Image (cartoon, rainbow, N blue to C red; front, side, top):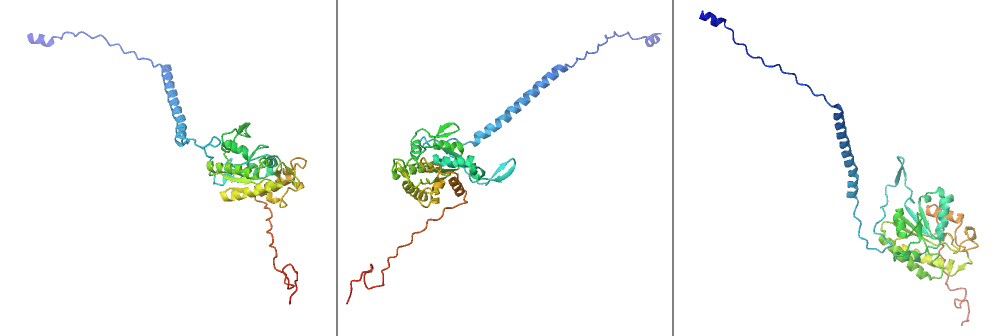
Length: 329
C-alpha cells in the first residue's frame, strides 16, 4: 500500500509565473533623423568650401616675392616691368596668333608724337600693327620736365585721367619698349648742350631702373626753311639730333632718325601740318613716312659722301700750281 501510494502520488503543483508582457518598440523619429543628416551635410560642405578657397591664397602668397626696399629716387620704382614675352605669339579665343612687335611698346613725347598718335589711332595708321602701341603725350613735355620728375617733382603726363610721372606710366602700362621723342620744347631759349645734358640724365636713370626695357630715342623733325623761333630752328634741331645720335650709339640706346628723310635740313612744305604756326609738325603724309620707317618698310636715302677736293698742281705750264708763269732761263 505504501508503495502504491508513493507511486500514485502527484507532485505538488508549482506556482505559475505571471506572463511577460512584450516590450513596446519605439517609433523612429524620421524628422529628427532628417534634420541631423542635413546639418551634418551642410557642415561638411562648408568645411570643404573653406579649404578650397584657402588654397589659391596660400599659393599666391608663396609665389609672390617680397618687394625690395626702395633706394632709388621717388621718380623711379624698384618694381621692374614684367619681362618680355619671347614666345612670339598670343592666344586669342584659343587660337595662337603672332605677337605684334609693338605689343608692349610705349610712345612718349610732346606735340610731335601727338601728331603720330592721331595718325595711328584715328587715321590710316590704325590699320598697321603700330596701333598695338600705347601713346602718351603732352604738348609741352620736355627733357627738363622728365629730369624734374627724377628729383621727386610732380608728373606731367596724363594716364587714365591721372597725372603721372614717366616712371609710373612705364609701370602702369607694363611697357617693354619705350620710344621717346623730346627736345622741341627744350631748344626754345636753351643751348643745345643744356638740352642734351638733361636728356642724358633722364636716359641714364631709365637704363638703370629698367635694364630689360628697350629704349629708342626718336629724332626731332626739322622746321620750315625760314623759321627760327626763339632759338628753335632747323639748325639747332640738326645739332641736337647729331649729339643724341652719337650718345645713343655709345650707350646702347636705339635712335630713330626720322629727320634723315629730309636731307635738305629743313621740313618741306608738303609735309608740314602747321605752316602758319610753329611750322614743325608733320601732316598725314609726313606721318605715313614716319610710320613706314618704324615698321621697317622704308629707309631714308643715305647721305652722300662729299667728294674730295682735287689739289693736284696744274702741270700745263712751268709756273706754280696757280698757273702763274714767272718765266725761266
